[in-house]
Each structure stands twice: as C-alpha cells, then as structure tokens.
Amino acid sequence: MVRTKKFVLENGFTNMPKEEDFKLIEEDLPELKEGEFLAEALYLSVDPYMRAYAHRLKEGKTMIGLQVAKILKSNNKEFTVGKYVVGHFGWATHTISDGLSTNADYPQFPYIMPDFGQLPASLSLGALGPTGNTAYFGFTEICKPQAGETVVITAAAGAIGSHVGQIAKIKGCRVIGITGSDEKCKWLKSIGFDVAINYKNSTWINALSEATPRGIDCYYDNVGGEISSSIIQRMCKDGRVAVCGSISSYNCDVHSLPKATMIQPWIVFQQLEVRGFVTKKWSHRWMEGIKENLKWIQEGKLRYKETVTEGFEYMPRAFIGLLNGENIGKAIVKV
Ligand SMILES: NC(=O)C1=CN([C@@H]2O[C@H](COP(=O)(O)OP(=O)(O)OC[C@H]3O[C@@H](n4cnc5c(N)ncnc54)[C@H](OP(=O)(O)O)[C@@H]3O)[C@@H](O)[C@H]2O)C=CC1
Ligand SMILES: C/C=C/C(C)=O
Image 1 (cartoon, rainbow, N blue to C red):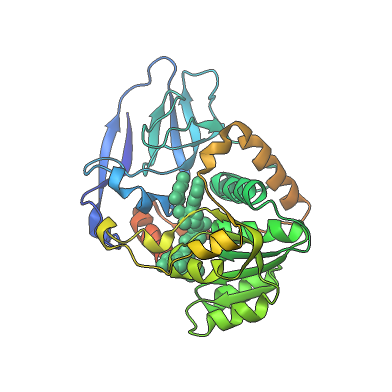
Image 2: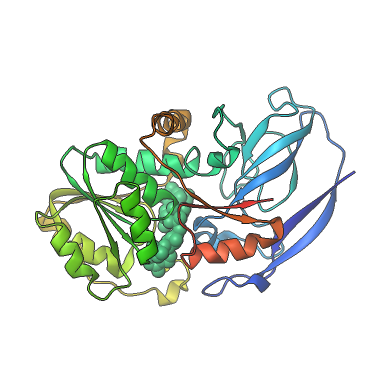
C-alpha cells in the first residue's frame, strides 16, 4: 500500500493566496489496475496560472500543477518502471495514472521525459518544458523577431522572460528587460540583456525612453496593466505584441481589476499586431520546442536558473513567493 501526500484547496483565494488556503492531507492509494502506473514526484512546478485559473479550482480538490516523477510500478507498456514522466498530476507526492489526461480543466497527456543527457530532470518543468516552449513559440511565432530589432520583455527575470530575452539575443535583437529589483537587473545583464530596468523605480519610464530612442519593435508581455500600457505607447509602426500573461491582475477580484491607460490609439496608428496565446496551441510541435531549447543550452547560448524550494510541505510558500516576485528564473519545489 502506498500513501500519498497532497495539497487540496481549503478556501478559494481572495487577493493574494495565503498558506491557510491550502490543506495537506494523506491518502492510501489503491492497487494498480491494468494500464496504470504509479509515479513518485521528484520536482513540482509552481506557476502563475495556478492563480489565474483560480476561478476553475474547487474547494476540497487537489491543487493543479505539473510535476516530473519517477515511475515506481507499472502495468502500462508506454510508461515503464524507472522512467521519468512529466504530467499534470497536481500537488501530490504519489500518483496513479493511466497515461491519459488527468485534468479536464487543463487537459494534457503525460509524456516520458526526453533524454537531456547530464542536465537535471527539473528542467522538464522549465527551460525544457512548458516554460521553454511558451518562450520559444510565443516569441518566435508571434513577435517574429528580426536581427537588429528592439525587444522589450516584462517579468524579464522570471522563468519565461529570462528565456525569451536570451532567444532574442540569439536572433540578433537588442533586448531590454523590465523587472522588480536591482538584484534581478544585475542578473539579467549577466545573461546578456542589453538593458535591465527596475519598474519599482519611479523613473523607470525615463530609463525605458532612453533605452529605446527608435521605439520598440517587439513586446513580450507577461504582466499587463499600466506597465504594459506605458510600453505599448513606445511601439514602432508595425510592432508586434505577444500577450503571454497579465500577472499584475491575477490577485485581483474580477470586479476590482486595476485600471490602465487606454492603448487603442497606439494600436491603430502604429498598426500594431497584438496577439494573445496559450502554449497548448503548439502542442503538436511540443518536442520541436524542447529540442531547439536543448540544443541552445548544450551550445552554451541559453542559460537557465532555478529558484528551488526544498520540501513538498512548502508548496504553498513557494507558490506565494512566486506571486510576490521572490523567484529568479523558474520556481520549483524539490520533494
Ligand atoms: N500564455 C501561456 O500559455 C502561458 C502564460 N504564462 C504567463 O507568463 C507570465 C510569466 O510566467 P512565469 O515565467 O512562469 O513566471 P515568473 O517566473 O515570471 O514569475 C512571476 C514574476 O512576475 C512578476 N510579478 C509579480 N507580480 C507582478 C506585478 N504586479 N507586476 C509586474 N510583475 C509582477 C515577479 O517578478 P518581478 O520581481 O519582476 O515583479 C515574479 O517573479 C505569467 O503572466 C504567466 O501567467 C505562463 C505559462 C504559459
Ligand atoms: C497556460 C497558462 C496560462 C497562463 C495565463 O499562465
């Protein structure tokens, strides 16, 4: 008999999630049926979408989330013992799966982790998983960057932002990152960003103007709100905006969303292409993104950083820390 620990949602979130909103419970798992396997989590991901999708979460249900897990027992020919599986198994230490989609709200099939050579399995949650693919497809397909263009990225020191910035450098662009601390700015410069600006400084817009004398060709938007309105007002004609997320709104009730300056005149007169996306759109090309990012990492062109919280019981703390901007690079939890 295997016992799993899991976090269920105790209370629906009001504004910033609190540790009391989660409850850690233990459960015995049943014996495996034909076609099933048992996996033990090694690393779990904490991500902003867990807050953005809060309206879909039900009290008493296991928190949603991706993990990479080791297969301990199996009655499934595709998922054999000893392999690592990447799956949306939620905030749980042990899972029984039949290899099919586990979550109707975020349907995605588990898959066997590709061979990363000596690189850590945790990268399957970040640079060599959804994060890397969100950066790769969202940036290359929507921003369509050209060498010499100016690219601005928000939440630039986070998992996706730092990855996008490095792809932009590979593509020959000039890259400006907007982030929330001087320490993060320093790190962005160390991985090749041309300019890094702390939006918590009251003069950040002046710094952005100085850094973009010709305007902005591509904007990879992770935050939305007033920061994005200020950036979009500096876009060049025919500029492209990839709207990846709007984290500045996630902790607000839908009835009290922050107001931001109107941007439609800039969209019209600069003839901007503004495109939202969800990475699932490129599910059919998933392994292409992973392969490309792996190649860049192996060639030394793409660096990754992880903020690792040790201990499954600290999942809520790691998640709240992410929403508070405590992470640099990808936020993960090591069981
Ligand atoms: N469209 C899609 O398919 C997907 C979209 N996303 C979205 O991408 C974005 C980045 O995600 P990810 O890289 O995983 O997370 P990050 O690693 O970037 O972590 C979130 C960061 O957001 C910043 N932040 C938090 N609150 C605010 C705020 N009010 N204003 C400005 N910045 C804030 C913080 O950094 P700082 O110190 O700089 O403030 C924090 O570290 C999110 O919006 C997420 O929802 C993610 C996955 C898939
Ligand atoms: C699939 C992820 C979506 C967001 C908004 O994070």
